[in-house]
Length: 511
Image (spheres, one colour):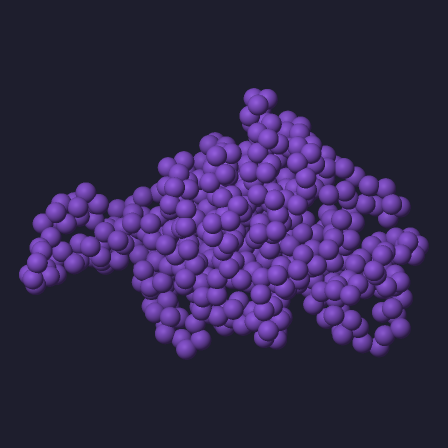
């Protein structure tokens, strides 16, 4: 992955840290006039420490980076700077950005933190799921619910009478308003003032959870489930993502006659559809599933889930990557509460990798805030979000030493109100120190995004500032494979496949 440079560009040639340290030993003190060479050495040392700072670039990469640097200068000079704005306001600005266009073309490696029922844009879901026969809808005081049934379903508590959508649409001259109304219930995105729509975390999280409840009856219907997952793979593939690790609840999937399928069937279906997709797209490397359980359950339910996860891992070793807890961290039970259940694999000598959500909070010093340390005590393979990591120097150092990467989801953290200006996101510090970091998109459909390019844009322009460069992007893509759950052999193959795509991307965008 390393190449000899042929340039005098100071942003691309990084001095060896030991050589710089020797220079720093001779720093002048007192009232002496600062030495420009010493200043240059300090600047170079800092630059070499950032993500991708030690990356040695080819001539073609250096040429691309020169143009990328100019693009970023222009971007940062804009009056409306997208990373400083709420994503709902910034989305259209990002779409017109030359940097974003480049991010879309760039091979980004893998997306390691994506949830199962929020990976496909909701416009597809409305047009391709709600227009199917036998689709019923009812309305609650907060949202909507769906179910597919050959006859009118049994009424739900606190929901209006079921309406067959094909009959309702047949009575309408124009169904656009209905479709738009359904769409608004399946996503957090709003064209209105987002700060007014979501004044605090409780409001936005309540709405967030309602969107999942609204989507649930659509995507757990077996025919939709298959098509939805295939479409999800398509959208990420078209965004130049070659590998996915999907957090999945593995719910019961139902048929039109009301019969249901268990988790083994669901895993098998994920496996089969992934195989179908890779047969048509041989440069897509595949998908692994991280089985998830809501953190609001009690200990006995969690213990049963861990037991089932161990069995599923034995039955599907090539599909099931591991286990995680999902749901709002601030309102759910902390990891320590489940320590006995989560210790079952170790007690039985069984390997069940963990990929814990931890540190997705700004409640400093609370029991929930200890999830970061507890996730490391429980040997998590990666940390989901890790927003609070800078407040935990011990956890930060442990994660670095153990090679436990932080799955950073910029847009998610902003929309769910952990940070307003992405320039102030803790990951900016992590990237300045080359801490193990991967960029992912969490729930893109719920945020009005898609794939991974929007989050890469925010990380590159917002976190990195003017200093991050093509080497930073390259390192982040490599990280997504290096810190994946792929075996060492699989990683080697995936990196080779990614590198071919990367070199093609660089050669086609040399301006």
